[in-house]
Length: 122
Image 1 (cartoon, rainbow, N blue to C red):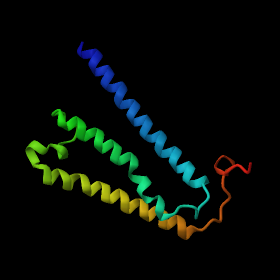
Image 2 (tube, rainbow, N blue to C red):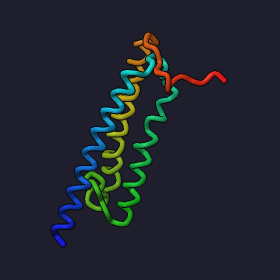
Image 3 (spheres, rainbow, N blue to C red):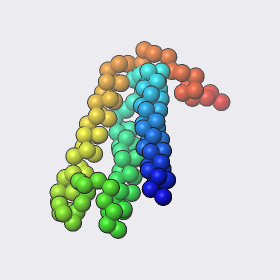
């Protein structure tokens, strides 16, 4: 039984690691191929959709007493500290997204958009 659990844990860990690298490499290729100068600051809130959705998922798990991260243990830390622990990374993500948009805006539209990213003209 323990061997099966250990194997399952290994497979899950390996899948998470591969997925993390795959997303990083794919996003890097996309960024290198995409036309620069097309992002606007009005798209900034969209960058937080996934992190906020994941945060809600994690907080719902915390309601039943399953804390996947020690920084979310409201019973031990208090709700004020958990709010600070949550707001910090979200703020950092927002600043990094704004910086990426600023760099994109400064870069201008000098590169050609890949064919899959061009809008159809029908």
